[in-house]
Image (cartoon, rainbow, N blue to C red; front, side):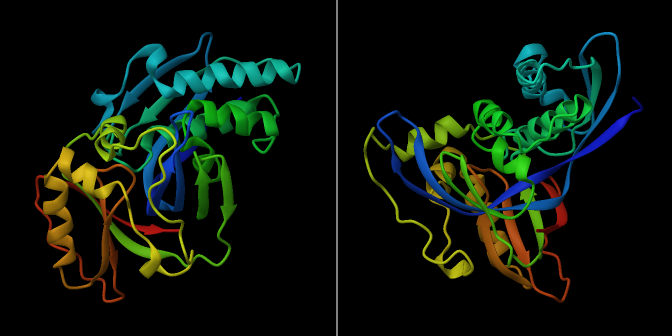
Length: 276
């Protein structure tokens, strides 16, 4: 094989409704998800043994060794290949880590999805095989939608995905104050007991007026700077809507057609993008 380069786009939750917490402890969600034109890049090259290296502005924050989600995706790919009676050729993975870590835009999940798709492609296994969807969900709740890689409505714990064929691309600015936010801590701050209902489903998947992020308030309680980012974006000319993605801390400003960018703190990470 020759080197294979894969793009792992940032995942943005335009809506994230928490419907409640199930008896098994998982939270039931209803979300509108789109993907950005910015993200991480993975390069797979032939190797004697599996290995991961990383460069980029956020490489130092990655978990090491077997704890890395790309390493777990490699194990999952080997297990899937075995089910098909195929062997996985060993590869070295180089990750260019451009997205902030623990930032609510699915960087790790997107990396896992891209890696899983790449690994299985080397073994001649289609990414839409049922075994792949199940393995993706075991890797993380956002991995299946990242595997789809297009605007979707995502429900359940992340396993029910329906593409949004009519979704129109949107110009946006992603802003992260470089504060890592723990997803379990945000859900813990939400404070739902097992079996407890909470919010309502998305009433209209095509109308942003019906969209919200139920994790914004608990995330702001964990990291108050998120509120500062949202206030600054909301007050900026040319911003049609400002909201938080996922469990934070990345915030999103949807931009009007005039191309005016919000003035953000230079200490924050930001990236202009198109969501689609």
